[in-house]
Length: 173
Ligand SMILES: [Zn+2]
Ligand SMILES: [Zn+2]
Image (cartoon, rainbow, N blue to C red; front, side, top):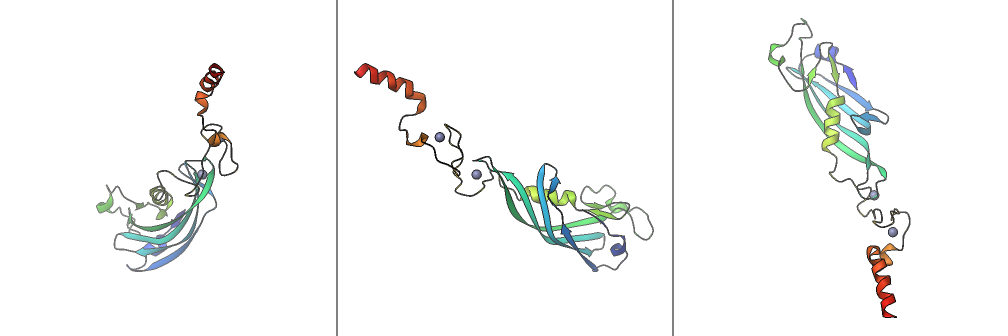
């Protein structure tokens, strides 16, 4: 997700470009995600303002049934990138030399990867669920209760007490 923005940096403040964003499923850090949508690059005084509505389809693992599922996210991206060098003179911009934020590198390449990764992470739930009413896994036998049912919950006696219950049965006879 790298864009060479040298040409746009040569244009006056306020100039814009629209770029399409389309990536197949791939890894962004440890998140498997596919991106779609478009971004607008706006020439600012010190660099470029990147804005857009990005669709991020993220593969998550359900916190209840442990199945993987695809979670759609809408990311409202707005991030200003600062030029490290003046596009005309090639001289470094002292004002952003120690800048810790997002920058356009010395080759006038703007890389969206890390910014999108941060937005994507921020959009994820703490405990992902494949659906709000996910049945989860049976705590006794481990079957996926979304797929099949089991008899565990019908059994009034906690299996851990089964042996004891059997002993009690015997003593009563
Ligand atoms: Zn689930
Ligand atoms: Zn069960």
